Length: 98
Image 1: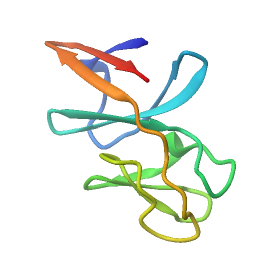
Image 2: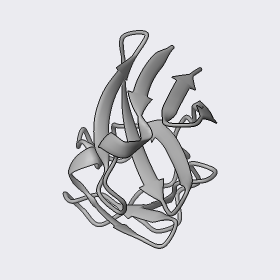
Image 3: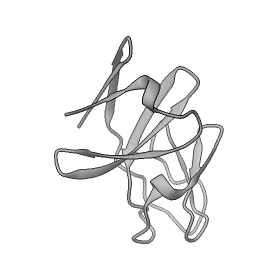
Image 4: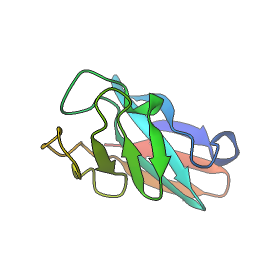
């Protein structure tokens, strides 16, 4: 489990954190926070370096898009979904776990 402050997350800008030794991409959209595996399922690229549009994140390397809510691969070249992580919020505290 990892903890991050809600205020430290910039809306629409992904962040990279570590959860039990796994790289996790965390994204704030409005009052919601989403957490997905950071490595694109198509290529070894960090999604925390990608761009967010709505509830989608685009891999900077080949343009594959993923749904931040479900981890689903939305566009080629990615075809496999990403692992998602549980997110709970208590005030300014955001807890992320597997």
